[in-house]
Structures are given as C-alpha cells and as structure tokens.
Length: 59
Image (cartoon, rainbow, N blue to C red; front, side, top):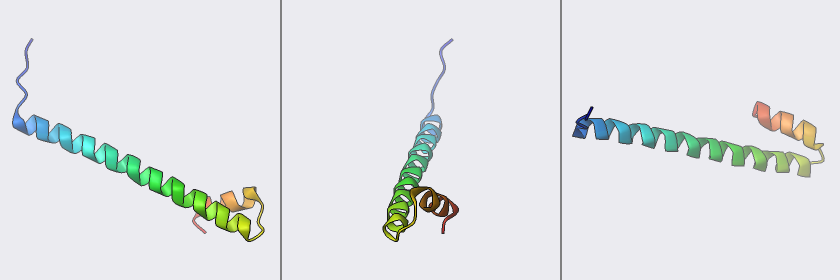
C-alpha cells in the first residue's frame, strides 16, 4: 500500500521534530543550571546531598 505524503504532512512532521529537539535542549539547559547551582551551594560549604536537594527544589 503506497501512501501519498503531502506538504502538510511534511510540515506537521517537521513541527513535531522541532518540538522534540526544543524539549531536549530545554532539559539540557535545566540540567546544566542545576549542576551549576549544586556547585555554588557546595562552594558555600553545604554537603553534596543538601546542595542537590536544594537545587532540585529550586532554592
């Protein structure tokens, strides 16, 4: 069975791919921000576990 792929189908598929890639980028940025925050808190003398908990909570 051969299916015809229209320009609209391609556009929808491209939009889905872009949304997926943007979400991956957002997650990577959030992870990097969290890692940076953990290092900042550890530099202030907190243990890694406490710093991780605080960074995870957004504090």
